[in-house]
Image (cartoon, rainbow, N blue to C red; front, side, top):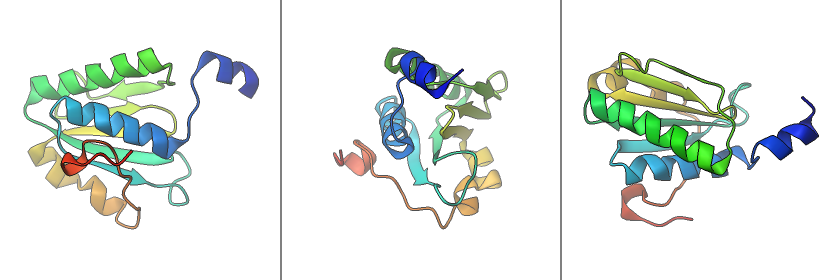
Amino acid sequence: MTSESKKQKFNVIPGPEKAALVAFWLSEQQALVVRALDVRGLSSVSDAVLVATAKNLRHGKALADHVLDRCGEHRFEYLGMEGYQAGEWVLLDLNDVVVHIFQDDQRRFYNIEGMWSEAPEIAFEGADGDADE
């Protein structure tokens, strides 16, 4: 698929802008401690990493479903998902944005934010009650 035909099929926006939008979608569905990190220059596979905590297993699956529904509405590319059945750590690959939805104990154990400690945060609407967009 050429990049021109890909642009026609998918809505292409800058990774940090997409990450801010996805972070807002997670926040509006009551995800806890949503963080969006700009990993451009630190990662060769994505522009942004999002980390969020679900209240329970059902909530984690609902968050993943909501993000995928909204990605479909906005025609964002979706490459795959892992961990949905178990629900303890759901990973969504949105091509240039990777979303991690954790249960609290799993989030603390894997410490994804620690791996990206040099990455600046991406501000998004709904973060700490602020409208940053």
